[in-house]
Length: 408
Image (cartoon, rainbow, N blue to C red; front, top):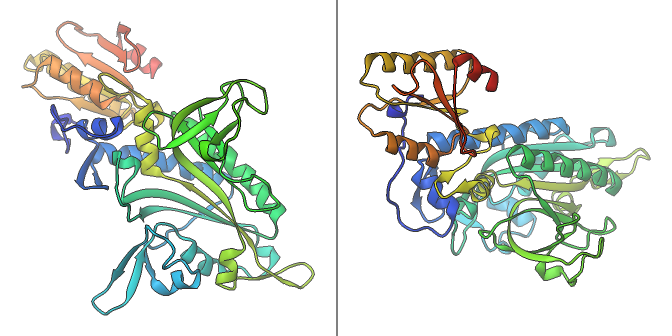
């Protein structure tokens, strides 16, 4: 991609925002806010979001979940069946010109359960795990922190159906491992898993996946020497109950959650199956969510410096940011475009800053702000060589094309 043709350029001056990710993603040309809590994703942002979704899909498919796509517009009657039409305070409610009432979905238990009912008849149909990635809606009183808390946001939902609690517990552990792989691949190295309730499989249980950052809304109590962590409102310890180390307190962002739904929704929609003994039973359900857009914002909160974003390689919009200097020189221009062509022919993702009327300083600043992992420079200074620098490293090397290919 030529930067000169890229839709959505960097901005030198923007107003103050209440989160680092909102500021940097806006300034670097990844997102644009059209109203409080409502965002458009520009080409750079859409690429990052798609890469996050690809990572999620791979791990969901690995644990035998199948992808579907469910509507965000739900008839009122579905929410009345679960007694949630008047109990969910963030539910967007709309009325059509024909007087029909609908909900804009903040979640999808009301559609996935009647869908599963059409196909689950016997214990042989279980377990079943279905997921989808789509937009969700929450009528937030005060949307804030950019894409960390919006009124419309991206979400991956996974719902699983099981013959009994033990089968749910086994699958639940698989999802935990899959989630940790997803977050690691997205560049989040330290995830704190907290119990949001008693944590006993004899009753309902749930867990949250949190990332330590000042931008967080969760007050987390955790141990630095082991995996122990709890939300402050359910914690009653100053010392870790597992390793006796002193506990720390910090803000955190919740990037995922998983919980036991029991049989509530199956009962509401009268979803039953015939077990081995010929008896009718309600399946036990589990629900597992990851906020895809929130995850993108969280990654920026963690991966940045005073110059801009530092994207983890797996989800960066491009692998290489190629900068051409002295492009009015015929030889330099030819070398720059030839390098771009060679890299793209090898299926290497390249953003090429081919602007001829922009200073070197401005190009360098834009590259640091956008945060692509590798910066390459072609100029009179480099001659037939290439200047190579990683975004998260100050070291600069002058290398040949063959050396470059070996490195990447």
